[in-house]
Amino acid sequence: MPDIGALCKQRGWSRARLIHELRRVAKAQGRELPSDESMIRMIREWVNRRREPTAYFDLLSAVFDVPFGPAPLALVTEDPTGGLMAAASEICADAMVRSNRLGADVISQLFDQLKYLSRDYNLQAPSTVIDSANGLRRMSLQLLESTRRPSEQADLYAIAAASAALTASMAFDLDQWGAAARLADAGVSYAELAGHSSLEAWTLGLRATLAFWNDEPDRALSAVDRGLTMAPAGTPRVRLLYIASRAYAVQGDAKSAARVLAEAERDQAVSTDRPDELHDRIGGEFRFDLARSAACAGATWLQLGNGDEAERYTSQALTAFTDLADPQQFSQRVGAQIDTAAARLLRGELTGAEDAIRPVLDIDAARRTVALTGRMNRVRDQLTAKRWQADSSALKLATELREWQAAS
Image (cartoon, rainbow, N blue to C red):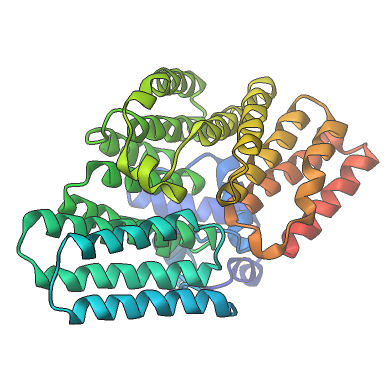
């Protein structure tokens, strides 16, 4: 992708001028852009290559007269153990296809592979997850040729959908926004073919998450609304409501965010009576439990600038993640820890914020996802804001966070 910072420098443009040019082109297309504050934040992340400007490729191409498009998905390849796992999955797939038969035992094996992949999502190298998920998707689509039974076809499409969704989620973690969006769209299509409403709702929730992280809350809410039309009662619906709260928060609509959070909490209180195959039986990356919901609520209040409510929920999330002691939820726990630091800064508690953020600085660079670096960027912005500019401790911590991000 072209270097936006370099293109601006060649033209002698400030970021304000770039925003002006983007708004000019957008207006000609009848399109409305986010606030200047949101645009400045997005442009900073584009320039630092922490985010792809997926939804703005056409505008940037028109403004700079240079073609913009998604970067190819980069994979980590140095992982001998992961390579063995991917090879095992491929060999298993070949054996199934060559057997020229399909039955309950084959479908069961495929679902077992899916469950293993989802539950080990955060424990494997990204390349392993992507290779295994792609292999599982190809296998399920090949096996469609071996059956005419609607129930078996539905199962195979469901496995293809879940595999595409896991790959989309990993692409997001790798900061490959364009690839993540396309993979999520494919997952929605497969899930629709499978008639698997829970999986379709989950993948639409991922699509919404990609949108609000890209400062497109309207698009996020549109995906949520679509998901709610088919989401089964219980966890699938609850998860979408929590995602909606975050989109409303990005929109700056505190009233709507509070309303859907209250609705989500009411639904969640009775969701244990409605187990869901995807969230509860396959689990792993597809799981949405009390820890994740509390982290989501904390992030919502943090976006709205309410430090008290944000810390209340992030503290609940940290306690729940600690009680679970599930290494699969590593990145979610760290995200809640960073959000706790941000909440304490909103409350004017620098020492408490440093206590929360300090352990995060020791995390290996390979485990720092785009969601974690994005959260860390917000904390650094807080530390360099006017409120803390005269505090040497705050500025020192901000420098450490900048170095952490540079190494990520």
